[in-house]
Length: 288
Length: 301
Image (cartoon, rainbow over all chains, first blue to last red):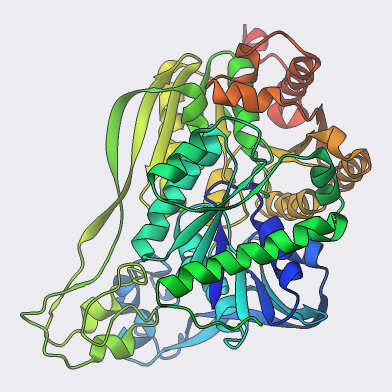
């Protein structure tokens, strides 16, 4: 079973919810940090990292001794990653989407592939909680291929909890696509609500059942609650604003560890999600 | 023409609230919302849209079932797993590379250009604003960011404004890279948390990578004083100017609910002064005056 924790707006508490749910469940869980641009889950889960892997994406390498400068490669490339200038072929690696079109189209077989570093995959665990994160190389623009690699490395036998990036565009889709449930974390403010609506549209486009966590539930206004009711989005957990929680977070401490009464609430959150998925006839329970 | 881009790495540190507050303090500026993925600045600015334009992004493959022979070439060649067994294109997975289009032996695949969102030229009580809305689940956010920044620049030239204030997206990926290239300076808004400092470090590296000068201000600084000091120390180590500190102040949320900037809500507070001081620091920073000339207009006269 895959639960993706998303939000639209940044800083609403995705990492807090994913990490605390993983800690509350304890065993049979694997936490994937798919916010590869700014991965934070490890700062709170504090896993022991066992190994790291460099992740690359294929980009063209042109053999100029075979090249006839026919320009077919630059013509097929929709991303302007190749340019033929006189007797030179310029490859703009950072623009390449790794589709392989140039290699296929080259009549001389002059193009092979080399790698552009996307970032690093880190594998680890905290006791029996598995952990994988991706860390995008600073300067690399494309996060979805790395997010897909994090997802591909997951252990399908365990409950997968995904800490997704903010927003509603391709990186978020890569972190939600194929999930059994999307848990959306929001805050009851105009920014929180506006971005939540966008996130809900994205989730509905993917056809995944969703529910809400309202964080800092007593700040702002009540509009988020009205919206949830109108849209039949179940509110599965509310977390009040508490300066002690905010301060604990600032030091890298977790709610379920600092305030043990929260442990059962996060377990109940998981059971509610499981019940919704079961009701939709999709559940394969993996977390025991 | 100078452009300040407000970014943060981590989301939710207060970029948009501070951008709006700066807009209220700036004289003769153009506003630009480069967070096209989850744009929020308009909620505080209530822009009157003067011009609305479609944003045409990349193309996507569409298989014509009348021409398709079911040979499977497209499935074999697509590296994104975007073509189903029944020869339909999954628009969410389609990368828009066109490989299937060019190699289909029956030329059965069309490649229509997609409308990926729209962008707006608007007026606000603080001056003109350029903003956009990327379609849900769309790609090409970097392209749209570049477009709104270019339009903001043009608008600023037309109106004789000498400053652009740009609200940037979170993260360090494609839309952020598109937001900071060629900017005069970056204002990095950091919150004093373990994740805030971690993400700031990556954003500072990104700024160095693209050679854009960065400046840091700590928002909600009183949440964790020790962390605030660690952030300021880290900034100095990276030669990043420390602009100041803003208190954790519920007035930001209250003014947001009212659809206003900090300075339009309630009575003047100590927080107002903190934000004013930071704005003064930004405007007078060396990054904003690369020739060392502070009052450009006065100097020319």
